[in-house]
Length: 445
Image (tube, rainbow, N blue to C red; front, top):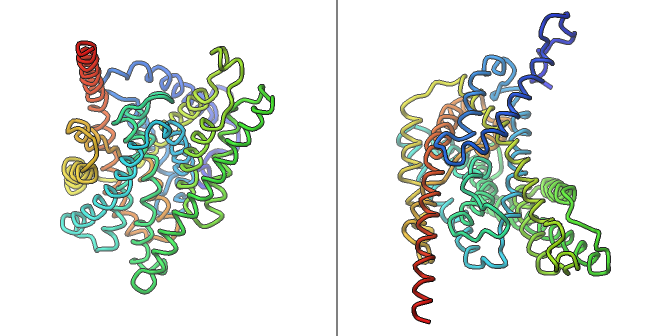
């Protein structure tokens, strides 16, 4: 692998610290820090992502001569970020309790589709005017930065498998869906750049990259998720009470659905997300409770599965944010990138979410919170590495990197510093409103 090409092939002499020993020590320190920060940061404006970013930045002299986004290592970065996003998308899907959230489902897809289209359109226009990008390059930048991030948004996502909070459900579902719904816009920009066939009036793009890409992936995910869930439920119904929802079942389902999605030239992220949704929905619908479950003495298998994926997702957060920190050391922050980030976070995203949620039973405070917490992160790194690995010129890759990385860094600090405070305040208001409603009901009775 190119990243390891410059590592020493012989062990260091005794008394000297070898590269292998250094990485063991560094990894151990990182994991301990990871475990401690999770508890400490819940009420702090300093998030774990900020710490991981600075660790990546401090380590950038060690990484930068081995990571080259413009050339040989774009494929490696694509694979790393791809794996992180797959885990995060599947985890987000498992957390959504659609059985009790039919109205919430509409809210999620409004955010992931309508808000996505509005965000891409407005960001393209700003990139052309502010950054001087051509239409194809501006569209590509907008598509790369359009998805909200299921990795860095963990602090504002659904807390547990029965969490029905409007804001958390919306942010979790949106982050899971729009990491995939950005793909058609990325490929539209690639078509404009001449690397992919657009077709007359865009017909080829519509049929291949929109209808087949999304529809085919959704069908694959539905079949995989529903088939796995119903198979387990039927086995349990026939007396195999010891058959549990093992973590390996979820990992296997995730891997199969993604592999089949990519093999079919559809969007693997869509297949994984739908597989997670279908798995949970069909299992809860068709599952026959065992005697232990009826008595409340059995394991919470679905809850344990979600917690397992949360842990893997958070390890991916460490790796992904450190990569962002390392990349930051190789670019120059400029006022145009920061101005673009400001317009995206303070104007484009809030306006797009507000317009997309018109007609829904979403309060002003909920709309404002959803509009602000549109965190950008590892999904954007994936799309950037993807186009770089598939033939985008070094010049275009460099221009995109100089905007994408500062926007992600700004999101890590702006959204990270405010998310805990805002969500805590929101929960207090929600509890107070629920208490007043309960008192009013009791008084009427």
